[in-house]
Length: 324
Ligand SMILES: CC(C)(COP(=O)(O)OP(=O)(O)OC[C@H]1O[C@@H](n2cnc3c(N)ncnc32)[C@H](O)[C@@H]1OP(=O)(O)O)[C@@H](O)C(=O)NCCC(=O)NCCS
Image 1 (cartoon, rainbow, N blue to C red):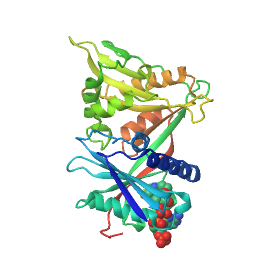
Image 2 (image 1 turned 45 degrees about the vertical axis):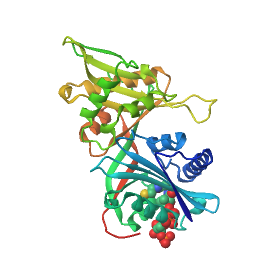
Image 3 (image 1 turned 135 degrees about the vertical axis):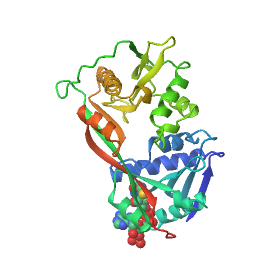
């Protein structure tokens, strides 16, 4: 087996990229869940790093058996002091042959001398991932939930919400609201590993995505000061259905952020409901979101809005000092 490492200063070839996407497709088909996060999938599709190069560096690791791409790992190395995170996937036809183990070894070499800080994401809490992680000396340290709720009013009506006096709602404006939104996002998610460090580069890349829709990016501003202050936002996301002849049915509560100075006023619930109403207006029948299982306030807010747990992603960290 040969492992080819493509760092973020290089670009994978079109052939490498299409082999990765093919592998992801067959793993998704067999496992019933995609093996990569949106960040990693974006990187795999575009061949570009997922984050600003000054903040992080990322790498693609491709494991070949002959000419066949048997496994793939995406590595994202954080700023100094932050953990590196990786996602690993092995082609279903090449499993239980040590490909995953070789990729973990390569990831540990790539993150040396801080390999003990490496974190692995497993999407769907798959049994083989648990066995694999445990065998490699990793154990679960974080649980991310996917929650869903129906959108059709006859199934689950949305509550009426009021925007407080002195506040107004409007849509995000490209070229105007980026810095204010990044500030609110960074302060609202100051303790969040990934979300809180979204950079202008990350934001601009998402704005350039075909799914980006300013009307689904709702802002609540405090108008009581001389200059309006962004207090809360709800960025919704609707991706095209895989089959281009059908319309999407699901929308995502992509990012809800309330400036800490405005938390506790009910703006989080208000802006969430406004975004859900927008998704319903688009004819979508279901809303979904991701939330950390230990973010009690957010889980409670979503549960009160009829969201229920649908799926789980697990983050593994190395706890046993074993060499795989
Ligand atoms: C998890 C995954 C990466 C494992 O890849 P792999 O190449 O099959 O793993 P390896 O062959 O290196 O297996 C190493 C050890 O992990 C354990 N393991 C792996 N798959 C297992 C399974 N299905 N059942 C039980 N144990 C398993 C075994 O202890 C195995 O050693 P053994 O074969 O000598 O018994 C692969 O199943 C996969 O791509 N799953 C979908 C994506 C995913 O869940 N990624 C998250 C990884 S944390």
